[in-house]
Length: 474
Image 1 (cartoon, rainbow, N blue to C red):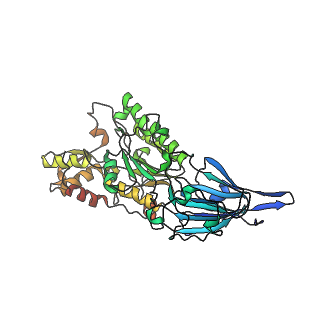
Image 2 (image 1 turned 180 degrees about the horizontal axis):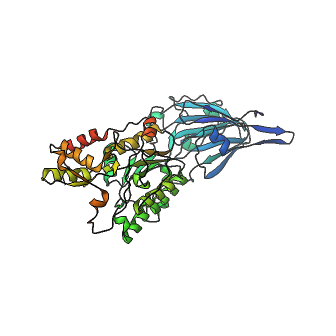
Image 3 (image 1 turned 120 degrees about the vertical axis):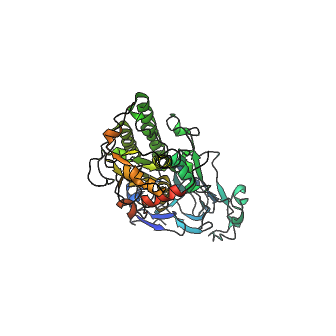
């Protein structure tokens, strides 16, 4: 019997993500009316914005019709249009709740959200029962399911009508017991730019973790124009975009300008479109170059951008596109040091060869090592604080480039006074090609990231650890 007059409410279950909703049903002598799916109200109650794309209806004319326990590779919103059902749900996802069971009855005044990988089955309790479900992926004949036998002894579902007395398909009768079920793995994390400085650090951070895919530009070119169909994107949970055009000075040339806009803007626009359409979390790496460096304090995430050069302009535009994705983390960093040619290795080489360099002393910031960026990204994805922009650099008092060079000299056992400070204008006075304008202040405020539970390592400690490592061999 439909329960009229209830308020919209949600109730959790022992299966993570499986949520029952009471639906207000309004009736009179003409019949009844309900809002079967009301996105704004249900999101306000904490339901995931799962983005349904297909609506299906199933009708059973006899009481006792029983459908098998199927775990599908999409999320579902299940409700009853007419009649009444007994539902049983079993968690068939990899993890600690594999095999957990929840049962309840549904009528037109109750609905349930079923997350991807949770097996669901239904037994009709009244004739002429119809139930409807919204799903967030289009049905496909090659979709991969997991199944569980309705009579599994471990799940021990107490069916209201004994299975021996109901209508069941031969396929459902033949499904495996729980011990033989293939658990559904988590959705995949895709790391783009996997051979770049940050990409290599992310490889070291995630290693051979299951369901992490690494892609180079040769594997997946986000500027190619076919990104929408390059993968079955509903199988992906997260995209970490570690690819970018980073040649700051070359971006000031006609060719470099086009390349920078293609990689940092056109490609990010395509990623944002894919992530939004498929409920994917997008992690996008930003830069201190989005600021003009005129502030006399570290930049906060909510400070307005004001880029000076082409590279900074493309990064600011890419940030704005990434921010349109409902689930996004923009990780803004500066003075990045990773594997390969970089400032720290250059200074160490000069010190060893007896060369006394002149280094810019009117630009201030913090060294940030790619291993710290990778660890910070993983923390954000594991902890899931509020989506948005997070500054992520090394910690400690800001340094000038000249100060950082002196720290390298000292750490490698050389006299730091061999480093002479010069202004940016003096340093680039003899440059033969275009020179991009640099922000004088690149220090970023780390308060928001620390409040999210991640404390970046002190830049001087990270520098010492970095220089203590042997140089990578070719």
